[in-house]
Image (cartoon, rainbow over all chains, first blue to last red; front, side):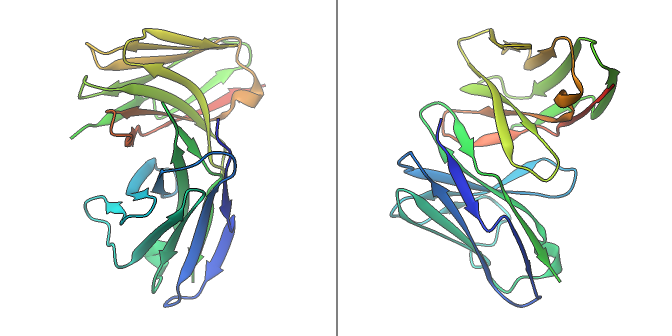
Length: 113
Length: 111
Protein backbone atom coordinates (compact mmCIF):
# COMPACT_ATOMS: atom_id res chain seq x y z
CA UNK A 1 0.00 0.00 0.00
CA UNK A 2 0.89 3.66 -0.16
CA UNK A 3 3.19 5.21 2.41
CA UNK A 4 1.79 8.43 3.84
CA UNK A 5 3.63 10.86 6.07
CA UNK A 6 2.47 13.86 8.07
CA UNK A 7 4.41 16.80 9.36
CA UNK A 8 4.62 17.87 12.07
CA UNK A 9 3.67 14.92 14.25
CA UNK A 10 2.98 17.24 17.13
CA UNK A 11 2.49 21.00 17.35
CA UNK A 12 1.62 23.45 20.08
CA UNK A 13 0.50 26.92 19.13
CA UNK A 14 -1.00 29.94 20.80
CA UNK A 15 -4.60 30.91 20.40
CA UNK A 16 -5.13 33.18 17.39
CA UNK A 17 -2.21 31.88 15.37
CA UNK A 18 -2.37 29.67 12.28
CA UNK A 19 -0.75 26.31 11.86
CA UNK A 20 -0.10 24.29 8.73
CA UNK A 21 -0.11 20.48 8.61
CA UNK A 22 1.39 18.64 5.66
CA UNK A 23 0.31 15.29 4.30
CA UNK A 24 2.60 13.60 1.81
CA UNK A 25 2.10 10.52 -0.29
CA UNK A 26 5.61 9.13 -0.59
CA UNK A 27 5.18 6.45 -3.23
CA UNK A 28 1.72 6.91 -4.73
CA UNK A 29 0.21 9.59 -6.90
CA UNK A 30 -2.66 10.84 -4.81
CA UNK A 31 -5.42 12.42 -6.83
CA UNK A 32 -7.63 12.37 -3.77
CA UNK A 33 -6.74 12.81 -0.13
CA UNK A 34 -8.93 13.08 2.92
CA UNK A 35 -8.60 14.99 6.18
CA UNK A 36 -10.05 13.68 9.43
CA UNK A 37 -10.05 14.89 12.99
CA UNK A 38 -10.32 12.80 16.09
CA UNK A 39 -11.20 13.96 19.59
CA UNK A 40 -9.89 12.02 22.59
CA UNK A 41 -11.43 8.57 22.83
CA UNK A 42 -13.67 9.31 19.88
CA UNK A 43 -13.78 8.02 16.36
CA UNK A 44 -12.55 9.75 13.22
CA UNK A 45 -14.72 12.39 11.63
CA UNK A 46 -14.22 13.28 7.98
CA UNK A 47 -13.56 16.99 7.56
CA UNK A 48 -12.98 17.33 3.85
CA UNK A 49 -12.04 15.65 0.61
CA UNK A 50 -9.02 17.14 -1.08
CA UNK A 51 -8.72 16.82 -4.85
CA UNK A 52 -5.50 17.64 -6.68
CA UNK A 53 -5.80 20.86 -8.62
CA UNK A 54 -9.28 21.76 -7.45
CA UNK A 55 -11.11 23.05 -4.41
CA UNK A 56 -11.67 20.78 -1.47
CA UNK A 57 -15.11 19.48 -0.62
CA UNK A 58 -16.00 20.09 2.99
CA UNK A 59 -18.34 18.06 5.15
CA UNK A 60 -21.35 19.67 6.68
CA UNK A 61 -20.46 21.74 9.71
CA UNK A 62 -16.78 22.18 8.81
CA UNK A 63 -15.79 25.81 8.27
CA UNK A 64 -13.89 26.05 5.01
CA UNK A 65 -12.49 29.47 5.87
CA UNK A 66 -11.07 28.13 9.10
CA UNK A 67 -9.66 24.88 7.78
CA UNK A 68 -7.90 25.77 4.54
CA UNK A 69 -6.95 22.85 2.34
CA UNK A 70 -4.54 23.02 -0.56
CA UNK A 71 -3.76 20.03 -2.79
CA UNK A 72 -1.36 21.52 -5.30
CA UNK A 73 0.42 18.35 -6.34
CA UNK A 74 -0.14 14.62 -6.53
CA UNK A 75 2.03 14.07 -3.49
CA UNK A 76 1.13 16.88 -1.12
CA UNK A 77 -1.98 18.20 0.59
CA UNK A 78 -1.88 20.79 3.35
CA UNK A 79 -4.38 21.68 6.04
CA UNK A 80 -4.06 25.12 7.60
CA UNK A 81 -5.95 25.80 10.78
CA UNK A 82 -6.44 29.56 10.78
CA UNK A 83 -6.86 31.63 13.93
CA UNK A 84 -6.68 28.52 16.04
CA UNK A 85 -8.58 28.29 19.32
CA UNK A 86 -8.34 25.75 22.13
CA UNK A 87 -11.41 23.93 20.81
CA UNK A 88 -9.43 23.18 17.64
CA UNK A 89 -7.07 21.04 19.69
CA UNK A 90 -7.39 17.58 18.24
CA UNK A 91 -5.66 14.77 16.41
CA UNK A 92 -5.68 15.40 12.65
CA UNK A 93 -5.16 12.48 10.30
CA UNK A 94 -4.91 12.47 6.52
CA UNK A 95 -5.38 9.61 4.12
CA UNK A 96 -4.68 8.85 0.49
CA UNK A 97 -7.31 7.23 -1.69
CA UNK A 98 -5.97 4.07 -3.28
CA UNK A 99 -7.71 1.80 -5.75
CA UNK A 100 -9.84 0.02 -3.17
CA UNK A 101 -8.88 1.48 0.17
CA UNK A 102 -7.46 4.48 1.94
CA UNK A 103 -3.96 4.66 3.34
CA UNK A 104 -3.55 6.71 6.47
CA UNK A 105 -0.85 8.98 7.75
CA UNK A 106 0.46 8.79 11.33
CA UNK A 107 -1.51 11.82 12.45
CA UNK A 108 -0.70 15.26 13.87
CA UNK A 109 -1.49 16.20 17.45
CA UNK A 110 -2.47 19.88 17.61
CA UNK A 111 -2.66 21.62 20.95
CA UNK A 112 -3.82 25.22 21.07
CA UNK A 113 -3.02 27.06 24.28
CA UNK B 1 -27.16 9.05 6.85
CA UNK B 2 -24.95 6.04 7.42
CA UNK B 3 -24.30 5.21 11.06
CA UNK B 4 -21.68 2.73 12.14
CA UNK B 5 -21.76 1.29 15.64
CA UNK B 6 -19.31 -0.95 17.41
CA UNK B 7 -20.12 -3.07 20.41
CA UNK B 8 -18.70 -3.37 22.96
CA UNK B 9 -17.02 -0.01 23.46
CA UNK B 10 -14.37 -1.67 25.61
CA UNK B 11 -13.34 -5.25 26.16
CA UNK B 12 -10.80 -6.94 28.41
CA UNK B 13 -9.89 -10.59 27.97
CA UNK B 14 -7.13 -12.85 29.30
CA UNK B 15 -4.26 -13.64 26.99
CA UNK B 16 -4.80 -16.66 24.79
CA UNK B 17 -8.55 -16.32 24.48
CA UNK B 18 -10.36 -15.97 21.18
CA UNK B 19 -12.58 -12.92 20.85
CA UNK B 20 -15.06 -11.26 18.54
CA UNK B 21 -15.56 -7.57 17.88
CA UNK B 22 -18.79 -6.38 16.32
CA UNK B 23 -19.58 -3.67 13.81
CA UNK B 24 -23.04 -2.75 12.54
CA UNK B 25 -24.08 -0.25 9.87
CA UNK B 26 -27.46 1.14 8.94
CA UNK B 27 -27.20 1.31 5.14
CA UNK B 28 -26.42 -2.03 3.51
CA UNK B 29 -25.47 -0.54 0.12
CA UNK B 30 -21.80 -0.43 0.99
CA UNK B 31 -18.86 -0.68 -1.40
CA UNK B 32 -16.45 -2.17 1.10
CA UNK B 33 -15.68 -2.40 4.79
CA UNK B 34 -12.32 -2.06 6.50
CA UNK B 35 -11.05 -2.95 9.93
CA UNK B 36 -8.26 -0.84 11.44
CA UNK B 37 -6.31 -0.83 14.65
CA UNK B 38 -5.15 2.31 16.35
CA UNK B 39 -2.57 2.42 19.10
CA UNK B 40 -2.79 5.33 21.59
CA UNK B 41 -1.72 8.60 20.00
CA UNK B 42 -0.96 6.93 16.69
CA UNK B 43 -2.46 6.73 13.23
CA UNK B 44 -4.41 3.87 11.73
CA UNK B 45 -3.14 0.49 10.62
CA UNK B 46 -5.30 -1.28 8.09
CA UNK B 47 -6.01 -4.87 9.10
CA UNK B 48 -8.50 -6.27 6.62
CA UNK B 49 -10.54 -5.01 3.70
CA UNK B 50 -13.72 -6.79 2.63
CA UNK B 51 -15.31 -5.93 -0.68
CA UNK B 52 -19.11 -5.90 -0.81
CA UNK B 53 -19.09 -9.10 -2.89
CA UNK B 54 -17.03 -10.97 -0.30
CA UNK B 55 -18.18 -12.63 2.88
CA UNK B 56 -14.90 -12.85 4.75
CA UNK B 57 -11.19 -12.13 4.73
CA UNK B 58 -8.41 -13.69 6.75
CA UNK B 59 -4.97 -12.50 7.73
CA UNK B 60 -3.01 -14.56 10.21
CA UNK B 61 -4.95 -14.72 13.47
CA UNK B 62 -7.56 -12.28 12.20
CA UNK B 63 -10.74 -13.13 10.37
CA UNK B 64 -13.31 -10.56 9.31
CA UNK B 65 -16.78 -11.44 8.09
CA UNK B 66 -19.37 -9.35 6.32
CA UNK B 67 -23.14 -9.81 6.17
CA UNK B 68 -24.50 -6.95 4.12
CA UNK B 69 -28.13 -7.97 4.41
CA UNK B 70 -28.06 -7.70 8.18
CA UNK B 71 -25.66 -4.75 8.21
CA UNK B 72 -23.04 -6.50 10.29
CA UNK B 73 -19.37 -7.33 10.30
CA UNK B 74 -17.31 -9.17 12.87
CA UNK B 75 -13.59 -9.25 13.54
CA UNK B 76 -12.43 -12.50 15.09
CA UNK B 77 -9.07 -12.56 16.82
CA UNK B 78 -7.69 -15.98 17.66
CA UNK B 79 -5.29 -16.75 20.48
CA UNK B 80 -5.11 -13.15 21.67
CA UNK B 81 -1.78 -11.64 22.72
CA UNK B 82 -0.92 -8.57 24.82
CA UNK B 83 0.31 -6.91 21.62
CA UNK B 84 -3.24 -7.03 20.30
CA UNK B 85 -4.24 -4.38 22.85
CA UNK B 86 -5.41 -1.36 20.87
CA UNK B 87 -8.54 0.36 19.66
CA UNK B 88 -10.19 -1.38 16.75
CA UNK B 89 -12.20 0.64 14.26
CA UNK B 90 -14.41 -0.50 11.43
CA UNK B 91 -15.23 1.80 8.54
CA UNK B 92 -17.58 1.52 5.57
CA UNK B 93 -17.50 3.19 2.18
CA UNK B 94 -20.09 3.64 -0.54
CA UNK B 95 -17.82 3.77 -3.53
CA UNK B 96 -17.40 7.52 -3.40
CA UNK B 97 -14.24 6.88 -1.42
CA UNK B 98 -15.60 8.46 1.74
CA UNK B 99 -15.23 6.37 4.84
CA UNK B 100 -17.65 6.42 7.74
CA UNK B 101 -15.99 5.19 10.90
CA UNK B 102 -17.48 3.26 13.75
CA UNK B 103 -17.27 4.28 17.35
CA UNK B 104 -14.41 1.88 18.08
CA UNK B 105 -13.74 -0.93 20.56
CA UNK B 106 -10.92 -0.49 23.03
CA UNK B 107 -9.39 -3.93 23.53
CA UNK B 108 -7.15 -4.87 26.44
CA UNK B 109 -5.47 -8.26 26.58
CA UNK B 110 -4.54 -9.20 30.12
CA UNK B 111 -1.23 -11.08 30.38
